[in-house]
Length: 92
Image 1 (cartoon, rainbow, N blue to C red):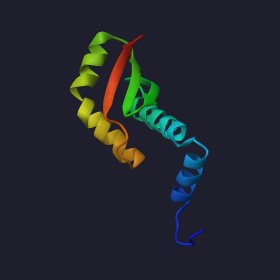
Image 2 (image 1 turned 135 degrees about the vertical axis):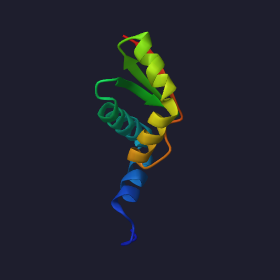
Image 3 (image 1 turned 180 degrees about the horizontal axis):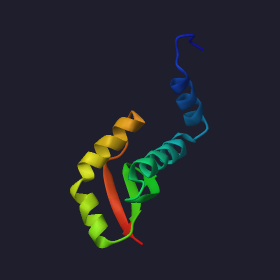
């Protein structure tokens, strides 16, 4: 092990070895999305660049869709990686 290696690299490598990196990214994305979305939406899942969220109404989904690129950028910045490419909506 390289003494200069940071904890993030060590964790990512070990998670990847165990096949858990994708699940860890999914959990992280959903947690950050829930933080950011607070009263607007709740995350459902994240897989292959697509964040699925639940919204209360079609009107709310439309308003979020108008800001989709801003939301994606904010989420990716908070995560520190460009993981999210698209948001899909479920009206609940």
